[in-house]
Image (cartoon, rainbow, N blue to C red; front, side, top):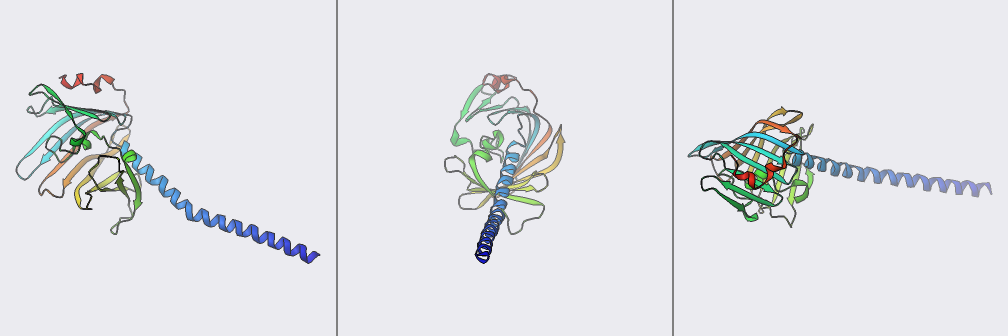
Length: 263
């Protein structure tokens, strides 16, 4: 009788041991995936909000370089949340007063020379802004990495141990021309290093480099963004943040069509 009880107890202990072994194996297998999923989401949210926050107000210079000419635009940019952007060019005199407004999915440009406001159609969002290598969408950031892309961490062949790499694929219902984007961020603080934009045939079309990390108020970010198209030799556009303020109170009247024509 004692032997039967001993065997039953031994079987029960073995079952419990097997259960915990299986449980530990499951935790080992799935915990890294959960960790990676949480980390990549944190990276994408950080990139989406880096130059926006709840509100932003910045003075910016845009240098447009081509093999035949070069020019620099000065502008002031206001943003509120992810839905509102207002841009006013302040120099040179030729372009002074040109303004851009985005509210939600709608965007307008005001041209002071002809005193007219033009609505930008969705099909034009990927068009060049002021002859630069940045698109309308780049400047007003209509698309959202969090909402408009699926994303995952990857490890390229030439990966640096100091960087994390994210592959972003546009969702099917979004009007985005890129086949994918590969983004590299510093592993220590998720600050962007570069982004590579590929077409639907997996051809590299342009490179965005982030440089000169500075602190504006309580926020640290790359103060220079350099866009280089790979299919236009000798072309590049450089954006420099001269100063910036984040999370300050902004008047809602800034983000109105009436404000487009104010000087």
